[in-house]
Image (cartoon, rainbow over all chains, first blue to last red; front, side):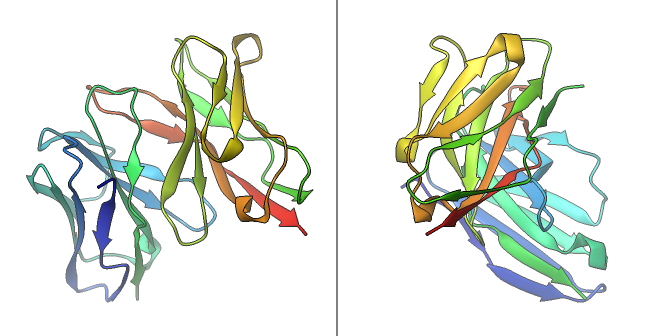
Length: 113
Length: 115
């Protein structure tokens, strides 16, 4: 199984809502990532978890809250978002230690009204 | 600062023609370089990667790339494109932060294929 599965594929939320994006992989990877991709732009790194511990936070606003409950799951909790947070959110996984391939999910397309 | 530049925002080629997508990097040490492809509404798929050794790297779907240190380039090539190659292509450098991969992507090149 070489898949990274993201749910939901599409999400529409108001600025006062609380929602979560979920990501799952069963490749035994111990590094998991959240990227944000705006239209016609490259992906930008948000968070990295390595062995279930947050190792990189790219100065992301606190309205985005990541969580890694176990080695297969990665969540992104969303609260009080702004319309400019509308984007494609991509999850990826890899083996820690670098030099390997990142496996990306198909993304969750978020629209904030 | 480490960065990746893709000079061409959009390229159009005819089906069956050859293709070269340009990528230039700025990095102090020997870079780990990647090419990813993204079809509309999809995630990213790795085409090929360079870490060390042979400077001509073979990838999936008939793509290859050549690392040229003297030119700080890692251009992607394909001898004959197919309509299914239409997609967005991203060059990336891995900054390797705290044992985790930290990919920095170029702005991307959108490839259109004429029938």
